[in-house]
Image 1: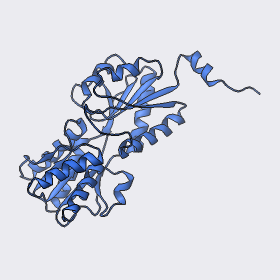
Image 2 (image 1 turned 90 degrees about the horizontal axis):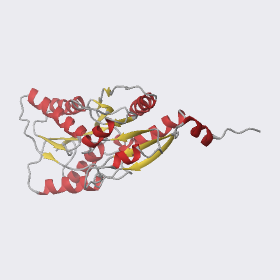
Image 3 (image 1 turned 180 degrees about the vertical axis):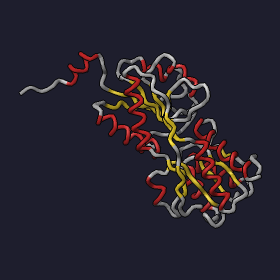
Image 4 (image 1 turned 60 degrees about the horizontal axis):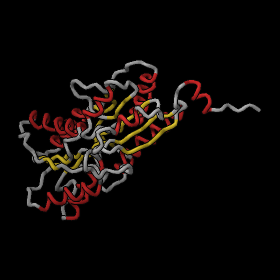
Length: 288
């Protein structure tokens, strides 16, 4: 019987038959590839790529190496690259995108951006969370997340938009906690122990950050939502299973994965496919 030699077919076509998937990290970041958001999206990407006949080459990028993206793009090992996040590497990504078409990132869309992105309207998402907390009676706000990440910065802008619309000060505490559960808990605990006034509401830039906040508050005898209302961002699987269940801003990751793969394949084919912005939705549960 004749069996198709997939490798020979790839060699004849001049294609590697694989897509590189990278998670950029900020310099000095302790964020791991086991991060729940990353693992959720990578599983969806793996299914979407396999359905289209592509293998997935997974790697973690070192933000301290200025050539981390060039190395994979020029390696010949992949036909294109999907980035999960931008971290503080926006300029590196833009530089490579100017010469390398088959590159798509999950992340924020910024003015003048050269690289193609898929992501939610982060500013809108932050506004949804803040408006919900405001409507529940909260007036003293804090934001947990590091705005060095463009997505986080946009979520903070959305929070400030709603505070201004409600006649409140936009000069709120910003606790620059990273996405790692352990580092987030450490930073939040340090801030709570520093004698800062307890906010009535916390808008967290991710579900992991929100749950780290809930844990740190509980360790100090503060009740959620009776003492502090908390919202997250992402709506990962565990968000509905915590105590209390987490109010959060949902990102449609299944749709996002499909868009990432579709745009990348169009770009592999030579089309300068445009960025896609997905509308976020607020999921109200017990934490607020």
